[in-house]
Image (cartoon, rainbow, N blue to C red; front, top):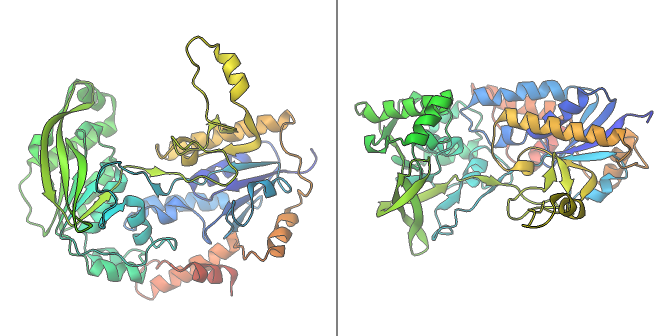
Length: 468
């Protein structure tokens, strides 16, 4: 092949950018178009990280370095599966990598989950991060609030609910979020986990940051500090687990601070029902659990009813399917092997059948289609996992290219896809357009003594990006 390898990457969050970076660092000459359905890039980093976490948003700086590569082109405000079908891409590209992430909320599967005042974490995160696809206003009238889930997303939600609006106004939150937070009545925020401290999915710094606000008092019941043999082994084998446990122990034994907003972290409480009256949340019923020695828990049969005016469940995100792309409804992921998309979910070999014969007959690949990130493996892991996924998927793509297995597009010229978008009247945005939107947000923030104020409305983002 004398021309560059043309690849479409779908999704401009970390997974998509890391896949692009792996391609750019390969020995092949490549030309990449990075498609993003939003007018602005960066996905989860822009719309999934709490606004008071500038250190995490610093990842954007490293993503910028990749995006500045002249062989990588951002095409925003284009939704694959709607504006362009997957099959449309084969006219222009040798291969496509799907990196659309996970933004939907995984259901808990307990009674009362659909009550008014029961919210998925993603919905609230979308609100306070100014995602144009989510609500512009939020009911924050509840004085006592529950957050289900002992991961960093649960901590983010609890911290945002426990802080004052003025504490968060120094961040990039837009005006509508600030006005809603000024009406926040929450005085108590309770975080619940069904297992113990050693099984919590917090990172140490996230946990310590809860204590940085003068308005928040973090409270842990000393009775919830309990470890079995597996928990002790986890502490010995992981510095992160040990640091989390040490921090929780410190919260449990210290004297009360008297700060006005209380943030409780409860362990060994498994939610079994969200309680309601007249269709609205009035409480949460939990069942006490105990460790079994192997890090798992069993029920004790003792239940507690808690009074709450709102319940947020942060038990995990899930990916949404793309039209005409295989999807495993059981795992909410794209079935794949090493990043190569499978026609259908991989079969388990039944007893008595020969594995190779079964796999050969059922585990067919979709030619030229690959996947990486959370839509590939589910919403688990950190940046290192995402980079590893990207490297594996790209390695397999390049191997398939060498063996002549990829698509042969009839219009691989870089101008061809732009002509197609313009013929369809699609107002796409670009990397240069992102710089224009970025400048507008920074100017709006500077006028108020802030680094940035996020533009919320979709059309406004497009207008700034296109210089209209």
